[in-house]
Image (cartoon, rainbow, N blue to C red; front, side, top):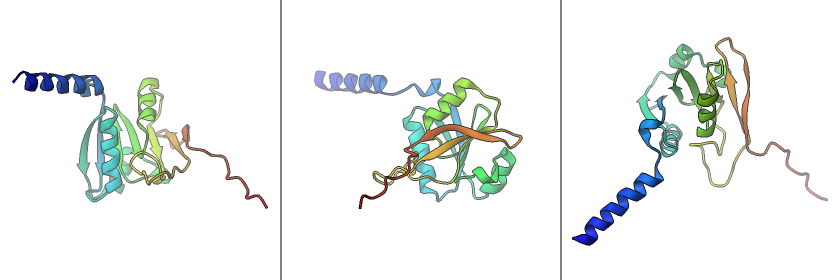
Length: 158
């Protein structure tokens, strides 16, 4: 009996020390296709990073993206909203945290397309270089963060 109580107390202590308190983290509302596996992986990644996530299955993503102001050139497979900002695609948690801390005058962040190695798009050791883009309601966009090695591959030696 004492061992069971001790083990229960240890599990509670480990869980409390190892996890971020969900109540202290922002809630990200995410819309995705009901059949999109990488979208589900990105949602799980955000939860592991301590974010609260409310997921919605949506079959008509393009009208939703238009309504939220996502430029077509920056579109990806899923769309989220956190504290009034749009989060489009496989945006890393650190970029979302920086956005929320800095609070720039912008519509949101996007990782266009579905780059291999971005959160939710893991495929073994492959990691393609990609950018997180900050975009405004007026349509301007600029690099917010760069991820991966952007150097060209070395030429083969003769």
